[in-house]
Length: 401
Image 1 (cartoon, one colour):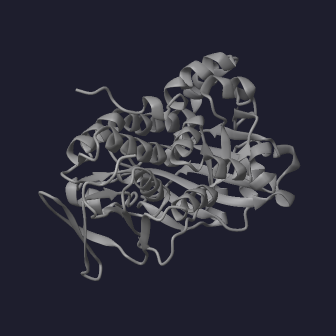
Image 2 (spheres, one colour; image 1 turned 120 degrees about the horizontal axis):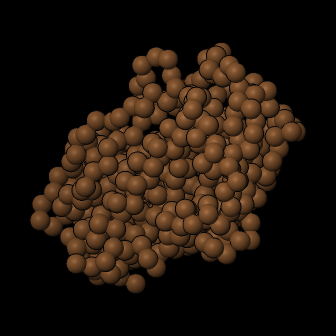
Image 3 (spheres, one colour; image 1 turned 60 degrees about the vertical axis):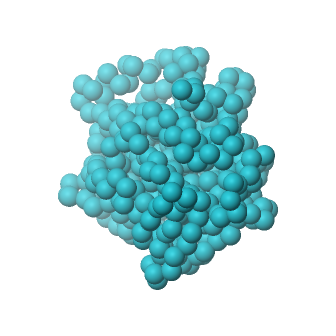
């Protein structure tokens, strides 16, 4: 175990999945950690998320894999249908052969359950303290560490700062200052009880229906007692990045021409949350002196690769490993951390954009997409996904230079 060269804590801005994972990785390396969360209490909102084998590898490295496994639903396959004619486009079985290939399962889980698993791990440590209702607004540095100022003008000193403060990161704004790239794609999310979910769609699968300028996703949650429903469409109006309450009338207006089987999903939820999505252009540098970025603050992405939470947890594990390898030398560790993560996370951001295009293909592009994947063997899918799902703590660091 490495331990801090000074008794000053490491400061973590943000108490979401990335911030908690970072706090846990740092505590596991012997650091005292202060986590600043702008909400009044540590918690999580949202609906379901998908966890690839790489997410389980990261959670195991953080020591919370078993907690998350107990809360997850293990699906039999990833399946994609054409939303216009309901034909099968592609199927990736996630059973025994999949687990053997990657060493871990594929699962779906409520976002709150991932957050809770991390929070329990953090609470089991005596090295992490929380300051809620506290928003970091400014960062200062000198040769020995960082000082952050919160919204009340109170100042906090630490040996380093991890900016895990999400898609609207204040830390990123100060050091990078780049604009968000609003996609114009709107995502509606809801959770529906099993009793209200169509029997002919109650599949133990992460299921995607690909349509022109839209797609629909559903999968079971919480032991199959609920189903996650996600629908995405290209908005007719200019969008601003953010979350609002959704309107049943709006979402129904975007799915004309969709096959009756998936179209049932549109009519289910009594209430929707509406996300206007955005990402940012990948950047070549995350670390600025003793401050670095992690999770959505470092690489905000659209949802099409289902990897946002997974990448944040990978970041945290890699940061911990970089500090371990360099014995607490922050300059070298932060350099190794960003070198280990930048290309991989940029590939997620760019691949996610491309997947959005493929899912939403229309006309001849739709026919090409369907031909591309139709009949492809599981083995070929597994080979294509190796770069993503094959990540482990043992190979997470870039080669030294």
